[in-house]
Image (cartoon, rainbow, N blue to C red; front, top):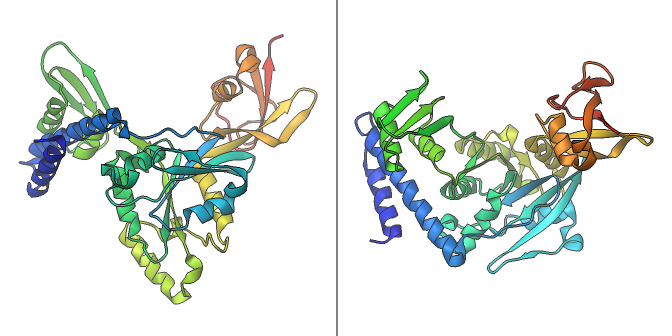
Length: 369
């Protein structure tokens, strides 16, 4: 039996096994085995030249536009970035990824118009694995849906899930330490509802014989398996509903209902018309917010504060992160910094490398001579 047949057989057994406390450990073992077989199949595909392509990342952040063919992604990226006139395409063997650079609030945000996904993409249909490999490198996934086909979201998000892309969640809090003897020891917080036997079965299926595992939070079996695999990526996402100009006002409640059916909050979705270039300001504002970018205005000796080309960092970044991005003499000869703005207690507050910066701070780096 080949790997694909083994995977399908395991999937069928999982689907046919009722979930309850008595079957939990068995299902956990099956799901761990399924993940192992899928990873092996992916590695085989990669070795054969079908494992994906790398897109060179530019700018301060990268956003992948995800959608089925003809949903309007190319129109949107051209409207936001003038990609037609300013950039070409990355040529791949089976697909073109069309990039554009969105300039917003002093940041350069790379938008990738990846070819339209089709169902079965995660299994390689339509060059799907190559497309999904591009999404895996992005800092944000923007689902682009037609206002008339909201159910596209379920199919798209499932394809990403099948390719080990986890959306809008954090990696599970799991720590594993290999040992030389004494079997498997499980330490778990009171919030964990998986029983100890299930956790042990998942570990054994992943090849652990002697190990100590600490589990916090309340992961599901799938999340527990994810935490033991190296090929999962975790990225935020948002939804843009295109062709909103084509619906009548009395149809809008129906659209909202369809969104809720897929656990999407209509208030969190951005309604746009790429063709008519409507709603794009709201879309760019939302992209900025989801990326968590912050502007740091550098106070340059003898030249004053540069408000035109800020240093772009992420929420939670520190002076140390700013030094990493600036590099050179700033990092090598740093003494202290002075900060004015939202993160400072007062103007020109003297701070060290662990000080957390905020949007629109003014920063001056003091270096040794």
